[in-house]
Image (cartoon, rainbow, N blue to C red):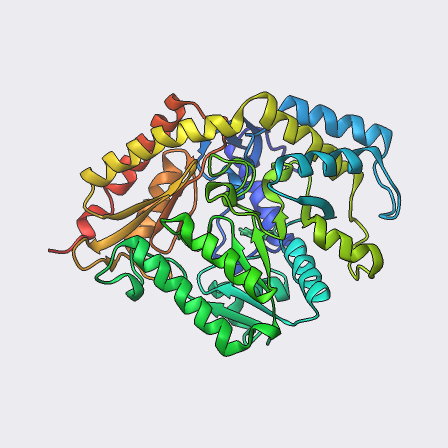
Amino acid sequence: MTLIESGSAADAAEIIRKNKEYSLFSWSVQQDVNPIAMERARGVYFWDAAGKRYIDFSSQLMNVNIGHGHPKVIEAIKKQAEELVYAYPGMATRSRGEAAELIASITPGKLKKSFFTLGGADAIENAMKMARLVTGRQKIITRLRSFHGGTFAAASAGGDPRRLAFDPGMPWIVRVPEPYAYRSPLYRNCTPEEGDMAVVDMMADIIEMEGPQTIAGILLEGYNGSSGLIAPSTARYWHRIRELCDKHGILLIADEVMSGFGRTGKWFGVDLYGVVPDLMVMAKGLTSGYVPLGAVVASEAIAEHFEKNMLWCGLTYSSHPLGCGAAVATIKVYQEENLIENAAAMGKVLEAGMRELAEKHPCVGDVRGVGLFWLFELVKNRQTKEPMQGWNKPLSEPMKKVAARLRELGMFTFVRWDWLFCVPPLCITSEQVREGLAIIDDALGLADPYVEG
Ligand SMILES: Cc1ncc(COP(=O)(O)O)c(C=O)c1O
């Protein structure tokens, strides 16, 4: 047997070999997978097994919001593991109560009681079940461009092509257009705000056609994430949807899995608009990915319903003590280290830098986002907005070149269709923002030659 030195290229190659030979990678044709052998991580950086450092500009899967390797959260996980590592979900535990109380204190309005899951998709499943149980109705309205998780009904709820292999999916999902000011035909010849209103008018119309008495909930990301950060320009959009819900007895469900926990510069995406949902779904930033945990947070009125009616929801690992312990420590880190405020402040530095790059690089068609939740949308032609690649098209030559260059220069982030995401951990400093943007500046230069005209 040959000895492989740790920290060597051979060590990294061996890790990758075993991973590829014995495990399956998500959302991939397996032979195309080309993973980084990730070994350790701290703050906004991580290192591979060969010792190469990467700046993490997507917080892994947009979830490591507090940054990597936070000692307080690691300590809390160790302490929890020593005290109580697992409890049957019918038990009351210290960490469960503390986590739920903290969540009630940071969520808006009368959101109060948490049902804990393991992640985002199973929280979405349970939120849809609750909406159907409470209203006695079946249908859930969602957006065409959206993502709500990879389990069957959650994938069906999203409009993202990750559902297409299993379509038609759930028959009770009704999808409506989204406020895509940059591309939607509903925004031609009008202001973005007028376009937003047209989108809501269409939603109202669809609700009438579907029969409001058949609709249990409207499920929307608090701030849309992996389908392209497509968000309205005016809070009126959300308020009118809230009014529609109130008028028809439909529950408003906010999916804050990606947009929650400071990502937008507020605790939750809906806080940008001052709207309060009836159910809020969270995961990712809840523990910053240190331990898997998700939650559905129910309003007092919904919680009241389940005082007298059966909650037909359950998981072996619901309210897992380790996850809840990690959530308590993580939420305290956001609070004690002012990470939400830092996200808002660093978001301004990031936005300014991105807009400068957009001026410089003709391949940039649009720059959009909020807080530390941004992307570049690349085009072949700024006037016609012809996409560099297009929705759900295989990675094109320019986008492949951009992605490869980012990786070569030591940046990890998402390059998906026409988008290059900038979603770093909330603990980032302005020097680190500039360090990341310098790498992106170089990589965008490889797409510029593909601009036509
Ligand atoms: C908005 C949104 N909802 C739900 C999910 C699913 O979460 P999970 O992957 O933890 O199941 C995701 C995952 O990216 C998401 O972005």
